Length: 240
Image 1 (tube, rainbow, N blue to C red):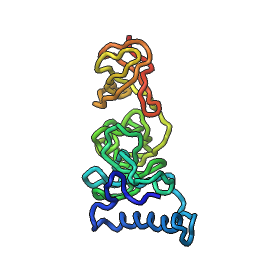
Image 2: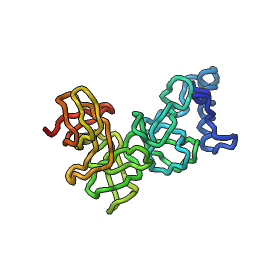
Image 3: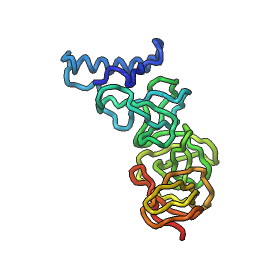
Image 4: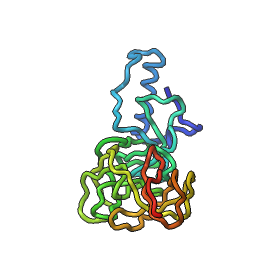
């Protein structure tokens, strides 16, 4: 069972860490004493595992609000993975990691909190188009961005645009087909940068994504369609 933070980093930000973080660490210590040390209650979990949440340590350097999004940059405990104690370092998204979640409550720097990873929850979404029904992560942003398609389905949002508190569904297998234009030529068998455009309005979203081309050579500034397969974008059609 994990007994210290990875890479020599203390679980506590300081000797005066919040009661919430101390309680989480004490919970692990009690479980260790009961199970690994053969104490009373050996072999039993302190509580059933909730697959909708994991714990994150706020590594953004700033406060996180309930509803902000973080990317999981590393496992936060030094020992092997345990299903009842999935603790991760949470950083500002840069789209280089697979896992991410929506923070449940206000969290100070270096403190621990739960993060939603599946199911319905409340999240902040920067709504750029009132007709958008989905949301995506954006590099450098702690707030989801509305989109015509993506990994997060918007269940409810207030009227208007801008940063709004919305009800969302994580893990919904929604539409994941995107359109964009090549920033440079992408030859067959290579990857290149594509600027994503909005469906319908065909406006530039300012999102730039690396797309793999397994078909014919595609010149610069050509329209392409692409999909997300296991975290990698693949081109499926292109303008001649």
